[in-house]
Length: 474
Image (cartoon, rainbow, N blue to C red; front, side, top):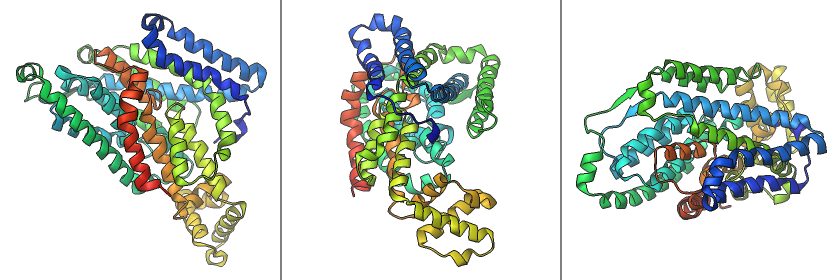
């Protein structure tokens, strides 16, 4: 976390963010034609209010530069995956029966940990829509967002941006899979069971003759545009590059351009590919990234005011705010809050002493508590000879992971940030992109309000509550 960039904004400056959320939720219902035409003006105008406040009111241009970099990175990743995945055409085999759909979503949940929720969503949403084309309803789109675009990506740092930030802050790569797989199994299992019950009822309503006439041929399973898989690997590999600045984004853009030039036109036509979904996401998230800055800055400064950060409290706070704020900085905020609450300066000094002693060949001479010893071992494993120079931030995270009870707080923050991202269309980057692609494919897509009240509250919230009761009720 770049603490030097944290500003103390006036809480009233969160109003533009609230107005933008309200516009995204209500305008398509109340004035759809006007919104379709003018949403860029609304997003940009509200974003400019926040930008002017930080430039001329707080005189903090460095904060805006930091946010602009985050936005460029976000849209480069989303955009490049959208273009490259749009160059891959997957011909599914047979009709989308409830059982086949459950298997498809389970595979999507696993793939999300390899390609990331964004990559998996962009690759699989079009074949998902095609295999259910003769009875495509809102629940197909919603459960795809629930499982593939969010909950499924909880097992690796590649799976979801918050977990990748945790990896950069010192959480070992396989630590998440080792400690979060029970929550992943409960979450994905619950959602797949709910989907099967709803989808089976929908399936039985469809006349047999319609299913046989419109379903995909039973003997076809083909992937076209396989060259784009190499470009997809290049994009995912570039995610780990931090130096020099903008090299990562340049690789992503280059991969997208190469895909657009090299992909045969027939593949794009088969996917009904166009840039409208990307344009909508880019404009709306430009406004979201700008207007949410005061809310995030205020949250980081006042996270400790929410009370003692028990795992259950961290789960609900991280999750609830991740439904409407970018879940990556929300994850970092509450990870920092947990580290600050549990890890004392004295404990940091003890870990440093062990690391210094190890560096001088006297590791055993600075024996401390198990937490101190385990934290030192974790830092040595991840940093090697450079462990003695570990920052206080890295030591705090290592201490959290090394204490049996404290480590549950890291699990709670991780699961809350990933799972609750499915709560709204803006909770996680791919959500809105899936919505836009589904609309382009003429699928029945719920409105912002309909998504929350018809699906998230009755179907997602029970899963979130069950996860809390089983794992975080302390």
